[in-house]
Length: 197
Image 1: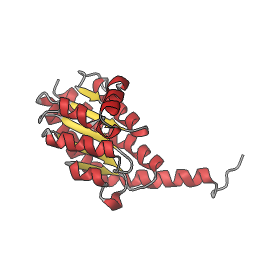
Image 2: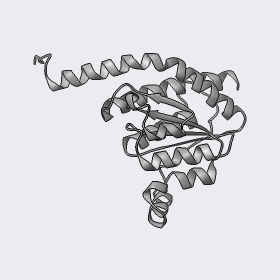
Image 3: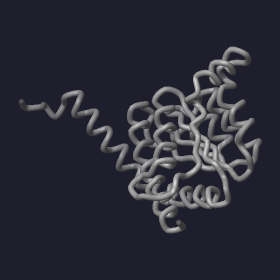
């Protein structure tokens, strides 16, 4: 079957390739971030991650790579996804508000040696903004994976020490690039963990 170069699927693929190519300029930022995260983990810090929907899946993915392994056999690294416990998140959502589901957990757990990583394709999710603010208030290193580079990462960027903003405003493209970015981050941290075993 021949596919027309103007088909919607080919257009989606071309858009994906353009966005992925734009990630190249973020590589120095990813490397610097990986060094910071590694240093904090080396000092006993813990990485806490969260997001909504597909971004929650990205947070889980990053944590899985750290606790498990990315490419090399090595020790497990301390990481927690705070968006995965339905009992805690629904308790907070019911007793307080959905906006508080990440912030209350981060406020309870995060310390200055830790890393708080948020994923949001828009940079506007109120519960993500509140979670990053709680991380910053705790003195943790706060990291934002987002899109919307024209808006500077949205309101969430105000509470992020490091921002990795993908050059797209389309949720699917942003999340695809976030997976690549979290893999690049995992690769660098993986190498550090093996070298310092």
